[in-house]
Amino acid sequence: MAGEADPVPTAAWWSWFNSVLVLSLIPWLSAVAWGNLQRLQLHHLVGRRASRRVRWLAAFIDPYLTVTIDEHESTGRMMRRGDAYYEEVKAYLGASCSRTARHLRAEGARDAAADRLVLSMIDGEEVADHFGGATVWWSAHSRTAARNGGAGLEERYFKLHYHERHREVVLDSYLAFVQQRGRDIMVNSRQRKLYTSVSDHRAGWSQVTFKHPMKFDKLAMDPATKKEIMDDLDTFKNGKEHYERVGKAWKRGYLLHGPPGTGKSSMIAAMANHLEYDVYIIELTSVKSNSDLQRLLMEIKSKAVVVIEDIDCSLDLTGAREKKKRAADDTKNGTSTSSSAAEADTAGSKVTLSGLLNVVDGLLSACGEEQVIVFTTNHVEELDRALIRRGRMDKHIKMPYCGFEAFRFLAEKELGVGSHELFGAVRALLGEVDMTPADVIEELTPKSKDDDADSCLAALVKALEKAKEEKANRGSSA
Ligand SMILES: Nc1ncnc2c1ncn2[C@@H]1O[C@H](COP(=O)(O)OP(=O)(O)OP(=O)(O)O)[C@@H](O)[C@H]1O
Image (cartoon, rainbow, N blue to C red):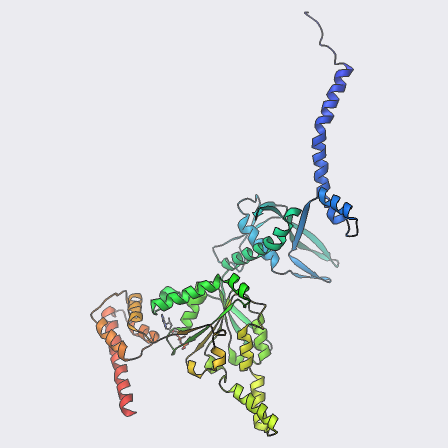
């Protein structure tokens, strides 16, 4: 009917409307309440002494568990840099979550290679990660701790949240996985270091950036031996599980022996570059005692090539044990003389063979792993057999005089020449006289702008002929 007013909602209509509104709000309100209950982390509030039923209820309401990783460690009233785990987690999250996180912090870390930035999550950011069928959530936080009236110290920390049903996978595997990946990322993104031992007041290490251009593809040596060494290094680097399974420290000893100039130091640089490890050089003659040697060793980190060069010159390794034994025998027989005791004392005040053996065996260095120990010597025959037996020095590598194949490699590298009419003469002469790769390289190096491949090869032939003549003269005068 025209002009009829809209019907006024009745009381029944209002009551129906309110009921629908309340009913539809119930799920939403419950979700909010449930979420808040969970955020209360009830299982943390419920003490250990609470009854099993109460604890079960708390865990049912809030099944999420938390691990906190602090940047700083609190030691009494002092704060000091926490253990490496925070940094490893930071590196892991920066790399693995940079695609999903919305807000990242970019830092040019002092230690990082120049063209790399270190990414990390900013405070308040949360990212999910997946591992072994479990989903976990990482969040970054910071808090300011008041310090005895002074300026507050900002403490950063990460929180890892995971469902209780993934407790085992997270605690038994995931945390270790994050640590390993974080460590790898940190190692790969930083410049490597060359450490040299110093022992002024206290034994320690001085460090510089390690940048050596030598790589295996630049090293002149028999290709089969080169491949064998590279395979050996790869097997070692990837051998964590093997070493764990057989119960051996994850270390490998190499003995490089050969005359001066055959490339022992170059081989060490190539090994370190291949493995991407730091290099530690122990100058044994300047290490004052076995305990100093142990201290040095304890400070060596993982992923390291530890070098003791010219071991035959560093210690009286052939004599030290005999001297000690003689002194001990003298004491036992009552024939001890001041000189034998003094000899033994002298041996005790410096690094001794047994001290070195302990170090090599890895018993004292159980804290470090993934370390290659390299000894070099020009006189392998003079070393104590105990020092270089297999198990201590696992692989013995002879660095030989320059053979024809090594020469060809060097001619290609130094002069860009793959064949030449003088190659025949060089082959014949290298079969008769010993010349080190270092000497061959020196002859092949142009000395003036007029020098070319012809003149350099002629210079090498001349030097080899001279060496042959000298050898003949030595033979006739002997
Ligand atoms: N096999 C090789 N391949 C390539 N370069 C070599 C080789 N051997 C020596 N050289 C070159 O000769 C020089 C000296 O070599 P290196 O210092 O490695 O010899 P070394 O055996 O360690 O000598 P020393 O016993 O005196 O320490 C280096 O510049 C290196 O580049």
